[in-house]
Image (cartoon, rainbow, N blue to C red; front, side, top):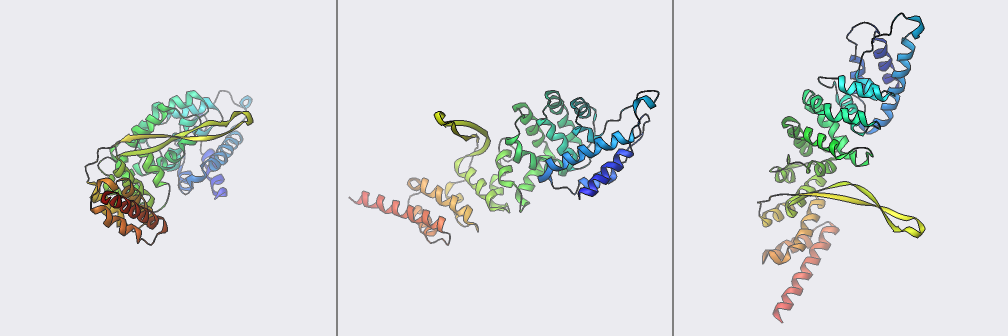
Length: 334
């Protein structure tokens, strides 16, 4: 794959004609980058930046051999130029749709650029680019970005707000909800939490709990319904545990948003206790223990079901609930 990338980058570079207005040929580059795994984005970005910079230098004659300064053509690959001025110029100059997920990801990653002016340009232009781009490309890029943005050291709250605006675009929101439900792999639980910052899941969480393919997503959705809130990771901050020995740890910073839930607790318990995954049933059993005093005579039926569960984690919670119920009955009898 690396050889194909290098070949495509060099073909693209050779199609750029300095000093004349031409439409550069991106077809090979688009085809190859469409096959790249976004999980290795840093690696591919470095390879492409290095090869593109080298190919451009080789294809352009030294300045003393030309009569005038060649007209620079701004391209999508200038988003990852070594030159911060070029990156800013590229963000501001590019318009229209990103040709695939890879190139839209290049634009998104400028929100974490090490040059403040580039980040500012990205804040101002990214929504416009997203609206023009195929929602499928935007959604794939957002799935990766939202899973990793807590590790982006330079992203600011204003940058996150831009991504949230993009998330709330009607077609993009629809595609994100569909992806949450239909994806059998990928960081969907993390995506669910981050999407909970916005209102795009409101009214759909029960459907996600019922239909999502990944058990962890169903479990998160049920927990949101039980607790009436969505919780997400904001980031981490350093906390000293013993400053004398310079010892400490990174403490998670958690954010949350309240939800209006109308579904009865008994109905949610019944549905979640019958789920085929022990991950979901474990959440259901935890909620049963918390709500024992509010369920009346129905509590024992749920506790007995959980106590006989084939999953050790679930059955332990069921047996604990039964002990609590027995203790309460003895206390009432005395």
